Image (tube, rainbow, N blue to C red):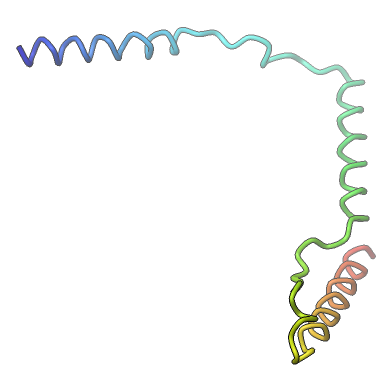
Length: 93
């Protein structure tokens, strides 16, 4: 009884596998025209330029820094922001 059940499970699972293997991809092998290649290049260039103008998102901030009595969090945040700005200016040149 178990062997028959096992055989049915194996046959049942092999059907979808065979169907996936026989599928033919359509539309993925389209050849681009020179105009499309140029448009993609322009789009990528504009994207890269826009990324350079955006502020650095990796600067850590402490939203509760002004609530603490130490006051050092604000000073550290300003120093980190200045360092990030300097790195950005150095990378732009």
